[in-house]
Length: 333
Image 1 (cartoon, rainbow, N blue to C red):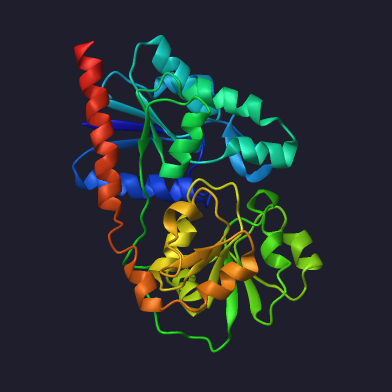
Image 2: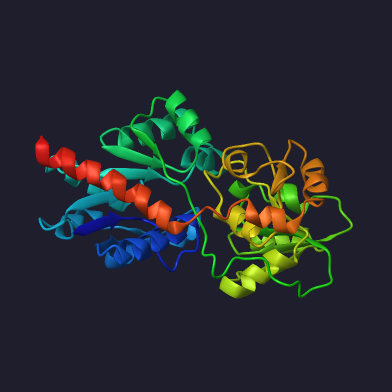
């Protein structure tokens, strides 16, 4: 059985969408599916103005070449040029498809480009409106999107690679607070960078604001992107992982930190609200200082055990169940 996944986000990008889709394809292949990823590198591309490291297809109308008759399932993962042309091609050819909402683009665009939420949410509601199912990361996101008129929403959790992210013996005697992720405005990172604390603050990652933040916050240690075992060690060595974002739909970095036994301090918003259990694996509060002071008292072992049930196998099973229903609907109508 052949599954075609269309995405505007793929390697060499480093983000939660790419992490999710890559882990998903690995699990689906274990189930003997043929998985085809249609991504920007298959097309002519240009840089996205507000995300310079992201390449967007500039000739996405050629996507029909890849959506062949022998595909059994079509999943459109993103709402960019490739996703848009795949959606329109599918509708024009009476092909059933599923979609997913990975990112709060309306909030991003409002913060970065001052575009009203009503416009971008209107586009997203139109985009996903024809999908048989739309996979969504968290229950609170389902509630939020439902209140905005979205339909056919299905909960689709996330997981981590347990062979990499697990509690490790500390390699550093330094007490520090950690942030891992994109260094950009929409991540609300300055709430972390401005924190008054005696502990060292360490930022793992890169992004368009890296140079400016390095000059502005000289006491913060910026170490660049880290991956796999090196990243897991940064998590394990940290006292608290601080997640200042208010616009993420999930935040895989949070469960990576928790899996390493490091509690998370965050705001009570979509994502943290669904992952963090106060006093167990972190703390959410409108004041990050309060969240950190509670989080740093949490037992590392209890923290790590709180998400042991999360697995990419279950994530793939949920996805597969959605595809089966799409296939059945397509065949019988």
